[in-house]
Amino acid sequence: MYSVKVDLARGMFETSISGFWTLADVEAFGREANAAAARIAATGRAPVSLCDYTNAAIQSQEVIAAFQRMMENPTTRSHRIAMYTSGVMARMQATRATASREEVRFFTDRVEAERWLFAS
Image 1 (tube, rainbow, N blue to C red):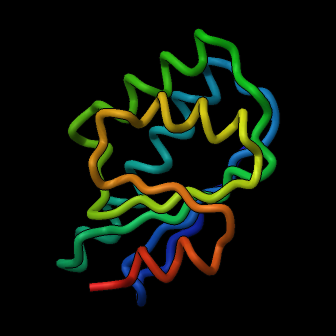
Image 2 (image 1 turned 90 degrees about the vertical axis):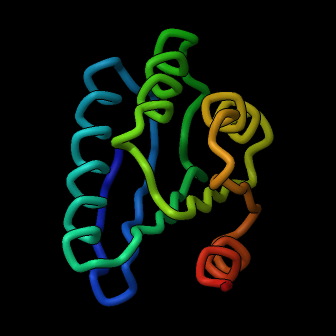
């Protein structure tokens, strides 16, 4: 369903999202993403996030709404968030869920996403 990996040396946490989610999945993901950001922030760095959305399924409206609420929460903040997927529908859903977040950008591949994430 998801994974969250922290790279303290780069000040980044990487997430991978797959499958069809439940509300419990959104809540658990939010807790883990917040914990990852807090670990990085404790080093004095502003966290950045790289999200692999290539295997994400089209989600229910209820799950998208919960994800949107999670993203609007001020504790769920990264300096930059780069999401990548080649799926048009998944990208449309993710775009809607993150519309209020100026620090989010979407890409079709990981290399392009990482390049933007670490650009000054």
